Amino acid sequence: MRSSRARHNAIAVSAANAETAINTEQTLDLALLCGLDNVINLTPRRESNAEELTGKEEPDTIYDLGRTAEATFTFPKAQPQHFAFLCAYGLGVCASAAAGTGYQHTITPIDNDLDGARSNPSFTGAEKFAGVLKRRFASLFVESITANFSADSWVSINADLVGTGKATDNVIQETIEALDNAESLTLAANGVHGSSAQDRLDNVHQIKVELDTGEWTEVEFSAVSDATPAVITITDPGGAGATVNYKVLYVPTEAGWCTFPSRVSESPLRVSQLAVVIGGAWDGSAFQGGRTLDAEINSIEWSLQNNLAVEFVPGAADAYASRAFREGRTQAVKLDREFREYIVQQYMDANETIGLHLLCQGDVYDDPHKFQVELIFPRLGVLSAPLNVNGKRMAEAGDLTVLEDDTYGSVIVKVKNLQSGYAA
Image (tube, rainbow, N blue to C red; front, top):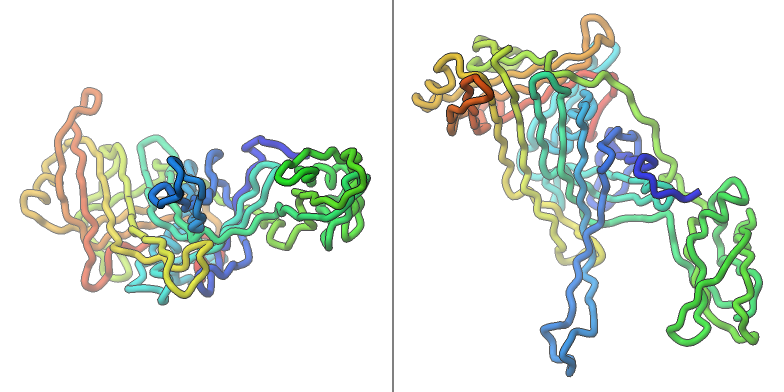
């Protein structure tokens, strides 16, 4: 039966396979354990004729300028797969290699643009909205990422998404011509989705009839056949035998994309499993030198912003956008720690660039290989590190800018799990 319970929602994506071109849907291959309030929304672009000479004081027309899409994905108990999926699409390049019985995914920022219409790779997403609607979204992009490592907490990662607005629903409306005293309606070609009589009845959302021009009256219905096309039993609207229009809002026999894939279960990461080294250097294969930070850390936050412009350009459909251009990637690291020594302050005083290495490991999947997330920042600069009081302890909040190293780039994300690849 139809339901409005948010816990019945589900989200699925084409995690392994990026779209081959903008607005070209890929097969959904992974269901995500997102936050309860995560919803992918369409954002209409509409305007009235209020500034045109209509001969009236108020507008009388709305222009439909298409739509875009947006969403926030939150993972309060982040697993390595969540980092791999979001970073692969947010940064743009993912190379995967065997690591025991699993794989290590090395993710780095894309250089320049993916193609003429996309700066970053895009994926297909879909959401089941309780028991009412399933909607598939083409060309979703990771606009921003925020990963947080706070003491005595789960590692979390969140992302803001933008999309072109191309969408497909599993609910359609069909207009049928029939007599105004009919007791059944036959759909043009479709069956109604459902394996039982009650399921099919629930999958008819509304029937209305135009008994007078522009006047629509609700029609009661009581049964839906399992035939194709389906026959719907209705209550006689009480007309005199004239031919009128009926509108039927229903779920037709569902397409393949409406069957969502399974979730993958991995061990969520705890911040107590995090190892931090600051001040060393990445040599292309390992992080060398530096100072280990541990109990003095209150939190570390990494943020990525792609600054994507979703655009409606010539030569494409006007119902949704057809270009996503990255106007300039920026990254930052916030380091909140107890003020135990003058190290970070000295980095700032000397305007010294430093490296940062974060390694968070979970369960073993094939000894010695563990589920893990590794973040490598070859070159950072300290913008500010104001001192403050946290409870009864002195602390400093380091604001570090991620810089692009000539050899190793700005960030390297390495994820180990059992999945063969992302954004390929």
